[in-house]
Length: 158
Image 1 (cartoon, rainbow, N blue to C red):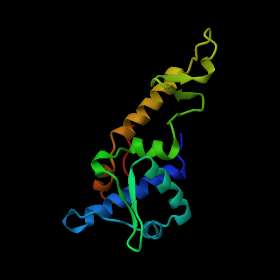
Image 2: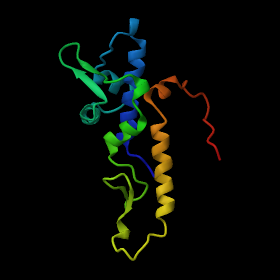
Image 3: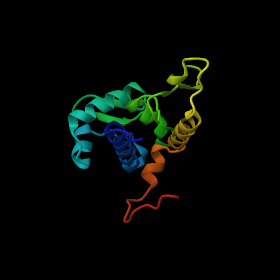
Image 4: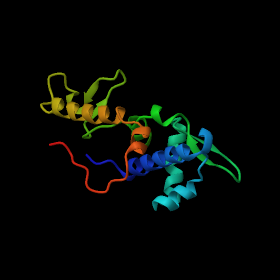
């Protein structure tokens, strides 16, 4: 499964907002112009404007208008999970097209519309989805700003 650039760029925006908030003297609220983030990280401003609208609608960031306007986190970085960010940008997380989350929170396979048919791979894809969601829920924006810039490749568990 690959997340789109919406998730990648949206997470980068959230991390940059958190980083800038942490640099504010006395813990003051830091309002960051989106153009600064776009220029600093080499991302297209028009695309970021689209993403921050989604993040704002989800209640993850706030904005201020005017000459000193920009964006800031709506809550402390420790309280914003990557699951919230990714779902605000990508929608419901599903490893394959036929798996989705039902209104009651259960995992639904669209191929099981016939009551006599059981999807033979539903267990696998349910576990994959659960692992992805759990990882995103266990990771906050604060966790990502605490990670030092990599100087070498990060080992991935086997």
